[in-house]
Image (cartoon, rainbow, N blue to C red; front, side):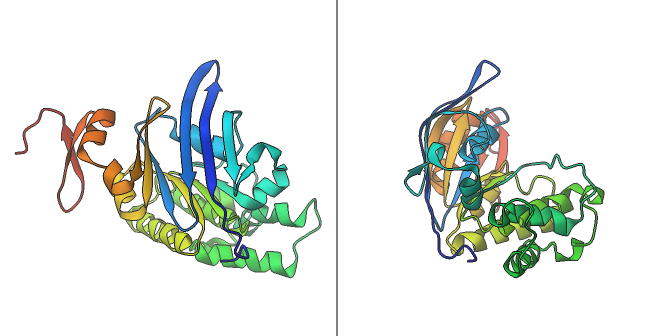
Length: 261
């Protein structure tokens, strides 16, 4: 692990977010620990992405968020950027930067200002590109990449920051099956290196196979939390999604009221 062993836990208590006069999250308690993957699950509009942004300090919130026991509100933006890396669903970047330059953006909390990259910075960028399987893209223009390729580059940018906490918003949404499986395997490897990982997922089978614990959200509230195997279970899924969970070789779903046949 390149962050020098800085293993940090992430805690939130009574977390709430209001956007545009609407209460989007309310009374959310959360903990994510080094070496584990925490999934944020729930239907569209449940507040998953908003919760991830609040944990990253990107939207106003009430309640408390702590990193390694230190309140997030007391941490400078630069220090926060060294400890938390956020990967959005889609990039808003429109400049014609090379992939290497985009990944290098993850190092600015370390270099400060426009001081240029050191040998260590360049090594971190190379390592991040290799780890995210984006090395072959390094000389391409970011805006000319496919959405799936861009997602791999955004993940590399997060890894280049050496942040011990990674917040990932649907990292497999734009990927084909093989790419998605590779990203999920990478998430597990990063957890094994003692990263603290919080990930928004839509695919509940992926959540079961990849994550250790889960929060199940509905309309901005936590409906169920605990071990993923217990959260992605018949009763919680029925209560939140209104569907019946079918256990098979892979999780399947059917409208509530359909027969097993």
